[in-house]
Length: 442
Image (cartoon, rainbow, N blue to C red; front, side, top):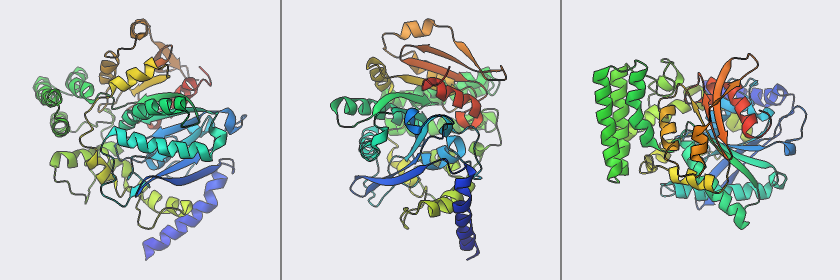
């Protein structure tokens, strides 16, 4: 009873405090879209709060979280780029200062999105892409003022894999006249585009920075080779299990290095969260606990299932924020290790603006691995891009915050002193990068 009373009080406080926190200037909207029978996806829109321009004069950015099963409406919004942080205090580095923000909980079952049919969870990129196109068609039909606004898709981790596929399908849908929007480009942040390129680089990377000795390096390389072998044989679910085991080998040999920021041992991502979710597959369960549960930490879960749920008013009583994330993760197990480098090639060949950005301190999707799959691109302009010298990106302090290269419709940003969650680790740099990618400054 006491907890319930606290939730009611918190909800009341939120309704009182949320608008004044931004002077009542941030306009919001949210809704569900039924994408398939018994499958409903939730979106949340913040209209841009630009100091001098109307929201129709600045871009619309859709943010896709990773996992699969991590919530953009929760983690991306309150822990990374939204107008308020988890304490409901204004975020000085919020992207809403320069763009309208559209958060979507995808695939179905993520965050506030839900299904009442166990067979309705997505099992591959094609299904979640089709679902997203239905949502975007409904969104742009209902928000006609955004149809001519420059629309960008930004992503993180597994969200990058989804973003690549969604971007290509959206481009084709726009050309066919099925969706009315001004699609301007996609940004792939610390993205799971070619998982094996990360896995095979883990050992040498950790050894080069003295987080593995020679014995540890041999053990990690042996484990990584087994992942490569499974992939070569087309055994994708087995490759996923072996990926998890490779991470175990790394933890054993590095005294538990944090996969999301190698310099941050005691962080959100390095904690072992307890879970009542049971997986018949031990490797899959380990991956879920390591990579999904930390994005649903107690403080964020209490916020989303308490005050925010009360504010939104449309979340069904039967739906718990994050309650179906394990099923999302489990159903996508056969897709984890499949690369989508060919999709990025198609995007570049079609003239779509593609940006890759990566945190220097990330391990799970290390920069070495990202550079590895980029070198595999068949894009005709790749040699010109590779021959460029990178350019330092300076902030007001004149400190070097990043390096970047850009050739025609392809760019790469190396974000210094950042791990997997670039906007969280380097908010000022990520905001500057957003402005550059969306042509609002350089």
